[in-house]
Length: 305
Image (cartoon, rainbow, N blue to C red; front, side, top):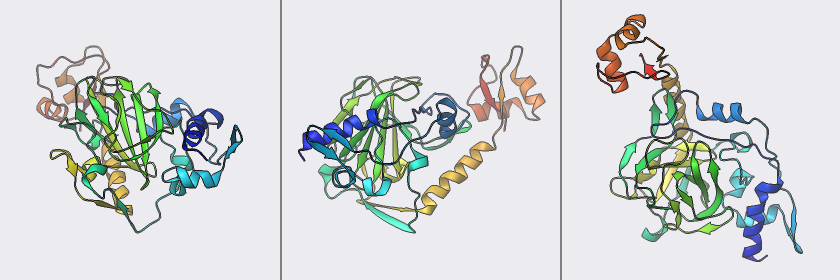
């Protein structure tokens, strides 16, 4: 089967199989509250058929064997969806005690997506989980693929803006959000360092930056465990994944879920909010990064514990 036909088939896949249109929202300065997966289910619903369809293009037919041969990590995921950004319902669970992934063999087979410094880390943030990291850039700066792989998602999403997801041979997927322009299509093969698009401020984003995620079997991994952002290089040539890798995320989500917030209404003041919640104005200022003289906005969420 010729590569061009293979890539065309992969690109068309999302148009012929039933999919669940999903959107995400977790970016720098963006909305808070619900976990991202809860948002996805509430916004669109539906289900995804994990069975690979047979698609005829000219005399060529794509089947499971083709998928195993040409789609990175297909044996792990058993699906290839070009519409749904995250597909936890149809992704196999992690069952290994420890799985060592090879990230790199030499310096040319990995790249930092952009040169900007870290301005928002992975983890709980203002009442919800931030499943990636935010890197500084200017609109129009090139955004590069971290590793070689195949583009699975290239679309506009109302929360992520212009977003690209690349699946890599070891089963990792990387996500690049808020781009001003996308320069790749689903099914396209890319090498480490290839430009996927240009940085921007699209979707739910307050200021130009790159929201960058690393996932395995649709489960998030802190990109800072894989990359030394400050030095602009991998931390190691291999990465060990085990159940504890994801258990720490569950604990962080539980911690974030115990936080309480007050939604500002007409007439609210910091002193009144502090009094109603048994705390002090200085504590509210510390928790929310504001000062006692800050102006409160209607609808603003103020963390109270």
